[in-house]
Image 1 (cartoon, rainbow, N blue to C red):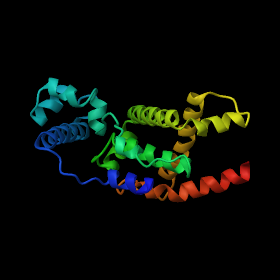
Image 2: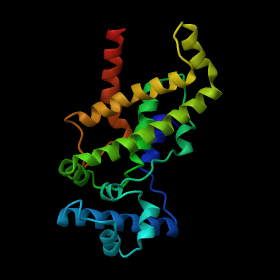
Image 3: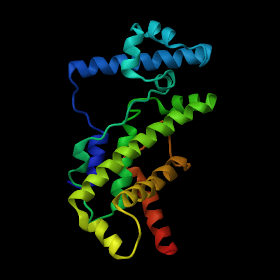
Image 4: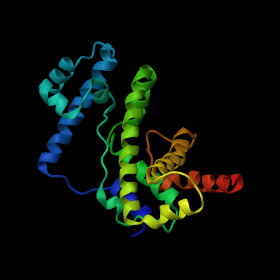
Length: 222
């Protein structure tokens, strides 16, 4: 199975969750919807955790099992996760940039799965300071991808060794950080483009035009 197809399959996974997982998802959604409704009704400052939990019908202790802050509940954010299956077909022999870009997209998307992206964008326009929570989650996703890539390089040391043989400075950590930072460019470019629809979201294959353009520009710059 090609890496792109694996990313797409995991991004669109339809495996039936367990009863416990469904209950957890329902509680998370209830808290998120309550938080959004209260912010729209009363404003962010007045939408307290106490009011959110009262409306959702759960305890404040339960709230903090799902969200570390009120802002995370409003935006529907969670800690991003890395599915080990994403790494099974990763190869350093083909389009490493594209693979890492798609990996980053899937991991970053896990932080807000099932959230109304249009409404979230409206809320961040109303309260711009909440964007820092989105940035923090993106940074967490990049940390996960960097860790995964470092592990892959440990199993395939020749790729990084070839870079150093060409006289380039930097250790493996530097190489990993630069690769992930570079791989985020097509993702950020696509989101910033007029072709991106918050309502539709992004699938791994949606990065293809930006990746193609990136490779073309890169060849001209070198």
